[in-house]
Length: 206
Ligand SMILES: Cc1cc2nc3c(=O)[nH]c(=O)nc-3n(C[C@H](O)[C@H](O)[C@H](O)COP(=O)(O)O)c2cc1C
Image (cartoon, rainbow, N blue to C red; front, side, top):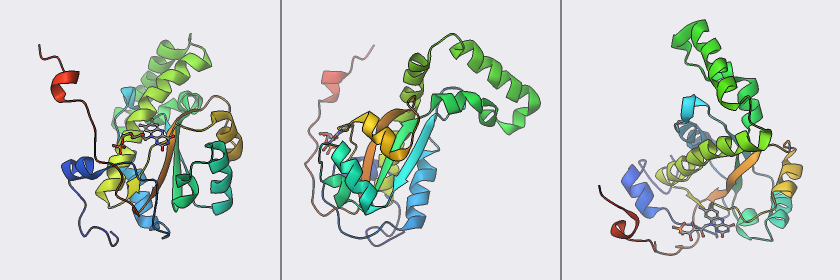
């Protein structure tokens, strides 16, 4: 743990205090905290435990400047000490699907996992199954923001960028889909108070 918090914030505290931050203190990320945040995000659930999410961590001012240009010049991309790009790689998921079978289920689990995925996605094209992969990666994206806040860091989720340019800069294949770009660091501004629909407005109780 670093300066801002002496203990991890509770989930409630992390959710309440998270807000989009677009100005950061000029301090490098603590690398242990960064790894722990990524580990916590990787504990997100996914259908059949597919874990389609992949993380690209950028802590390189030159590359951040190029990413900023691909993100219509948004300042937080270079202002933050690090940027985590969260994407889904459904083709990698399918090619290595046995890895996601629980080891307790043995060889039967591994071959069962392959059969399940072939049955579900074999007839779909890359774009279709890529959409499904993205729906799973979005869960980890949410976990990532809450985990970061819990350890005293701030973030801003971003989809305002040109995906093809970001794929090119990071050397990613065409089929990957982006959950978002996440500048991360310690806040140097307060951000805006939450403005949300009421529970009544968005909920139907049956
Ligand atoms: C998927 C997604 C994409 C977003 N893209 C951008 C973006 O490109 N640039 C930006 O400044 N904020 C972006 N935002 C931040 C939203 O504007 C912000 O989350 C929303 O206004 C609610 O404010 P809060 O995060 O402070 O609670 C994005 C948020 C999400 C969830």
